[in-house]
Image 1 (tube, rainbow, N blue to C red):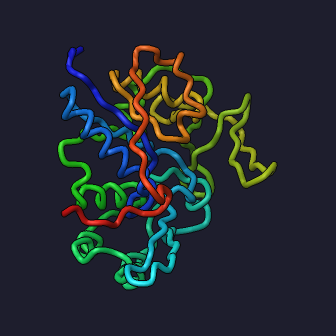
Image 2: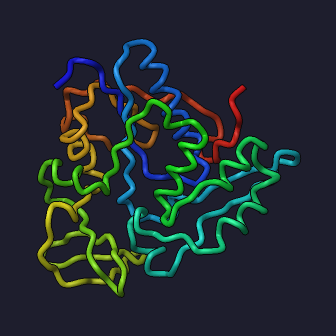
Image 3: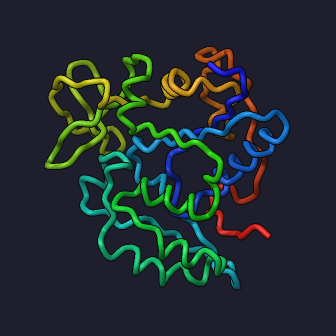
Length: 258
């Protein structure tokens, strides 16, 4: 292992324009890299399944009126239960959305959005982040990557990607069955079946240990919410750095750097 710093931050794909708190993580990482050197790693947790993560809140550039959008999904099962890297985008979504967002974004981003090409939500978000220059010089590690999953440590508190209604869904392992959360106290219960390490992704409580077993970072940039639940005892070797403060953190980043 190298002695050079490895500066990491994690996040689900969080909108086709990234939320401002994710942009702040990139800024924090680059500031820290300028101070101590090393590489930046973006742990992209694209095996999460919550479709609410990709809601994108834009504001009209003149009157500041809010516009809340999300992807159009291929079907209801994918929308609710498939991991983000398996949620397919509806065929007409990009063209319709381009018209809606035009008054809300800097002109420089119009061709970036129009030129993004991807069949699923996670790939589209990453294509946008790359087109906006956010991924320049950043190594992206995806939780959906079979090689990453094979290399990760064993965890018992986990989700598994399994077939359901002709789709791949992300189900919580609970004893001798798999659970799909419908909301509130409602669950769809699937019978357990054999699975391999390549189907496993972590829960919130096991994500840090699972991620660190692959990335071996020296510094981790933690968001405001993460600081409330990260169990630092799972990775005491890491130096934890709070992300830079940014206003309107849950809104989409659509500014254009000067």
